[in-house]
View 1: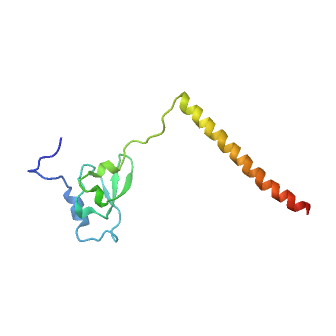
View 2: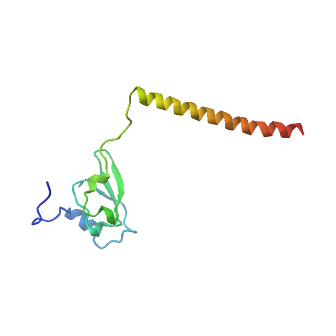
View 3: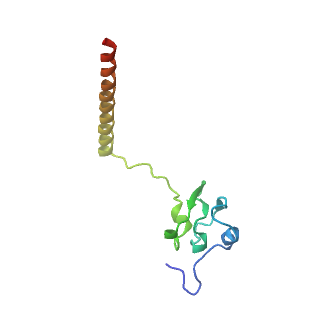
Amino acid sequence: MARSLKKGPYVDERLLKKIAGKRPEDAPMIKTWSRSCQISPEMVGFLFGVHNGRAHLEVRVTEEMVGHRLGEFSPTRKFIKHGGKMQKELETKKKEAEIAAAKSAKAEVAGPVAGAAKK
């Protein structure tokens, strides 16, 4: 549910104080735990360290991000991979192809060197 228009967007006052009077190029990373804070036009160009529950992830604010929340750009969960039998088969085929390519490249390198030694 959206915030009412009467109230306006939620922008953390402490973040606005930290960026007030600073230039984005000179400002260091601004750490914040306020993931629910909406990005305002004044924040464009600044580097924020948004906490994801474990660490502060760097988020450089661009114009396209205005109106979104800081937490959208700092994922809290790490995607590993989808598992299963089909995935395992695909990975083994890929690994075999890499090994075959490496062997062929090694054979090409060894061939010209041996021919040069005979001369």
